[in-house]
Structure formats: C-alpha cells, structure tokens
Length: 247
Length: 209
Image (tube, rainbow over all chains, first blue to last red; front, side, top):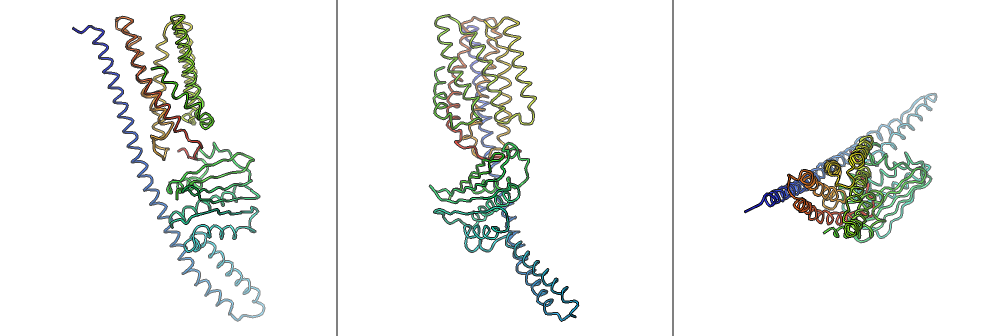
C-alpha cells in the first residue's frame, strides 16, 4: 500500500522528469532550427554575393569593352580636328578631359573586377592594388606573402574584397601613416594580418553594428569561406585585423 | 554528488586566462559554489546547520549570474532593466531574510524568484543566439551555460515550491524531494565543464543585430 509520501514522491519525480524531457526536447529543437537557419542564411548570402560579383564583372566588362573604345574613338577624332588657332587651347583642354575620363573609366573597371585577379590570382592583384595606391595616399602600404597557397577563384575574389575593404577603411577612417599586410599559410589555414598605426576606434561601437555595411561585408565574406575574423582596436592605438581562412 | 562542481572549477582554473572578461562572473560563481559546498559540509558536520551560508550564497549567486548576463550583452539596450532586477533581488532578499527573520530558515521565495528570472534570461539569451550566432550552437559556451541554467533552475523552482508547500508531509520527505536537485546539479556541472572547454581562446568578431 502506498503512503501519501510515496505517492507524492513519485508524482514529483514524474513531474521533474517530464519537465526535464520537455526542456531537453526544446533545446534539441532550438539546435536543429539554428542549423537550418544557418544553412539558409549561408545559401542566401552566397547567392547575394555571387550576384554582386557577376554584376561587377559584367559592368567592368561593359565599361572596358564598350564605353572605353567609344570614348577612345571620340578622343582620337577630337585630337584630329582642325580648328582655328584661337580655339586650340579649348581643344587641348577637351582632349585632356577625355584622357582623364578614359583613365578614370579604366580605374573604375579595374576596381570593379581587376583583370589581374582573374588571370594571376589574389596575391598579384593585391600587390597591383597596393602599387597603384602607394604614392597617391598618405598611408604607406606594404604586403608580405609567406608560403602562400593558391586559392580557387571564388575564395580568391572574397579574399581580395576583404583586403580591399580593409585598405579602403584604413585610408578613409584611420588616418594611418602605415599599413602592413601579411599573408601566411600554416597548418592548412591562410593567416592574414593587417596592422595600421592609425587612430583606432572603440570596439564596443563596432560590435553593436552601428557603423555601416563595410564591416558586415567583411564578416559575411569571412563566414562564406568558413573563416574567422578577429579585430583588435583601441582609440589612439591603431587597428589590427586577423583573419583565418581554411585552405 | 555535490562534489561534481570540482570538474568545472578545475577546468575554469586551467582556462581562466583564456576565458576573458566575458565569462569571469560565471567562473567566480563556480568558485563561490565550491567554497559554499565546502563550508556547508563543515558547518553541517559541526554546527548541524548550513542554512545561513546557503541563504547568503544564493544571493551572491543571483547577482553574479545577473552580472554574467550583462557581460553577455543581453541588456545592451536595457541597462536600467539590469539595475532594476538587481534592486528587486536585493530588496526581496533583505525583506525575506532580515525583516521576516528567515535567515535561519531556507529562503524559498527568493530562490523561486531568482530561479524564475534566470530561466527567463537564459531563454532570452538562447533566442538571441539563434539569430546572431553563425557557428554550431552545441560548441557555443554561452548556449551551453544557458541550457544548463534552464535545466537546473526550472527543476529548482519545482523543488522549492514543494519545499515551501510541504503539503503537510514530513521533513524527511521534503529532504528527499530536495535530493532531486543533486542529480540535476550533476548534469548542470558537466554542462558547465563542457562550456568552459568551449570558451574560445580569442574573441571572434560578431555583429549584434
């Protein structure tokens, strides 16, 4: 015969057991839903980035292959015009303007999709980007590559965009004298480190995502490659990015 | 069974420098828990009671874990809520233990209050991780901690209610009921130990939405 105590004890044990089972099921459901969310998010992000890169390639090609030759033809025709001596300065000015426009068009097409990136890979494209910038900006950028490995096309584009974004952020915000970029392969990982001696920033502001899409783009591209991004910055002490990407 | 707290405490000692400021209140809470277990054992053996130190311990535990949720940025938009909850904890503990002279008795109402609060905060944190975490949840130290909190403190609420409303049965029965928490305690301590092992050595950059 069961006493009240035994009955109550059993009831409480059953209640506690049921609560535990319900909570465990809840946690399992959370984990499964989260995995599904991540998969969908990665697929969506991948589609967005692919579309973005395809558009960039298309626009770069249109600029370089369509608009470029047209403008070059106009420049050629303008430079071969016979005009009165009084109008020559204006003609020379127009010729110079067209040359500027052509140059700017090449730069925009190059920024959108560097041909070096497609033909020679990310390391050469990066060196080309840095060579083009050094001398035109107050920041001195240096690149060191140690035992680096080749990347497949998609990852190469992501890596290039990440470094391009970091370089542009440094130029735009950091007011740095120098920016050092190091790329090294180690234990099947590509380790990228960028260090500048700029003004730095408060990390807590950045971590709450109030500072524009640039950092979000960096993170998204890192995530797409299965990599990790580490940021170390303090006001007045420069900024360091460490990126680890599985090869 | 209470000795199972040694496992997470040992791991926390080994990984203290790696843990960073994000997990310090939780680690201090574990160390305080071990200290309280030892103290309870000694006081129980020689003074036949460990109620007073346990009442003080649960108060400290509630504040440390509340602070831990603050460190995890759960209150980043509602800092006043964090202060409000801390004040509610303090007020309830003082009223129950000082004004009603219950420090020599188990302060069940306070335990129910802070357990309920911690379960809610844990669920909010899990919800937040669902949206912000882009890596496996089972390897996320915060998720493991919150899962352990939900399990442990949910059962604790149930047990405390039965401790409070003994339904007229004997004290021996009520002590038996209380022993259920020992089993849940072991599971929680193991989860804490795994969580400490999962604390990343470097803080990856993530953006909160």
